[in-house]
Length: 318
Image (cartoon, rainbow, N blue to C red; front, side, top):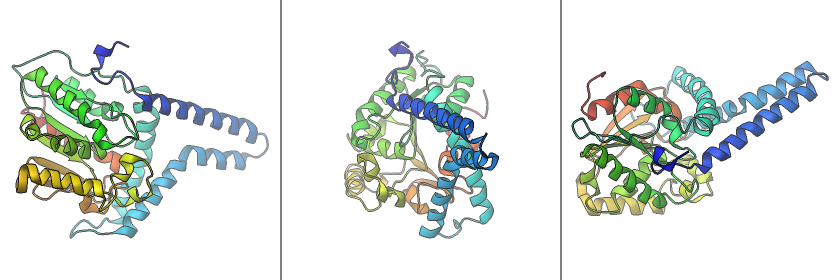
């Protein structure tokens, strides 16, 4: 693959890691079925079910933690039906995203390279923790269909500091400007929203270089689950952590009370990764609640992409 086909995204160590994990998982499943089927059909089914659906048990535990931790604001307490919908949706999406889109389809839909200064602005997409540009595949497919220019990044090193991603975002915004001659809309899912904030806080003029910032399930005030992380970017997402406090201080020093006036923050009351629920909001931002959506699934809620397309100045369809 030529580097100019995917500016700034020509290599993904995460994709290779996930390819290895998926292939290994498939081989283990094959060996298990081959060994256990002649001995016990029940044992074969039980072990195969665990290999195929073990991740769903983890998701259920995450949602149970989300309910136990609580911290819900008025009107955000999840109903049983919403939790069920979130669990079912995420159980399927986890396989699609982490075992297909990211390891094997991340090179689909190359970034826009053709300049067009007569149309609307571009969109820059920033994925979250343990993801790559393949996360955005449904978005890329729709944007390409509508001929809306876009730029993506692969945030690597995968387990580095969030501050390490600032040069990647700066290059992506510059490319988006070069494509259209206009300030882009920049969208971040999960940790990607924090990477955007770190980039904005790294220079006084960065806020003027973007049209709008959209975050989707981003742990702006940290997340309870990050207490278990032992990698740099995971620890930076801890509740009441030093890194988040210093980031907030830099933002307020640069832009004062209007630090988040250009933000739209989408959050869910059934997010299985970012909770308590208010941690995905920002003071002064346009905070928008989606009920019954899980963490990954929140990014694929059709209303969010439609809203971004409208913010780019495009109609409901092109």
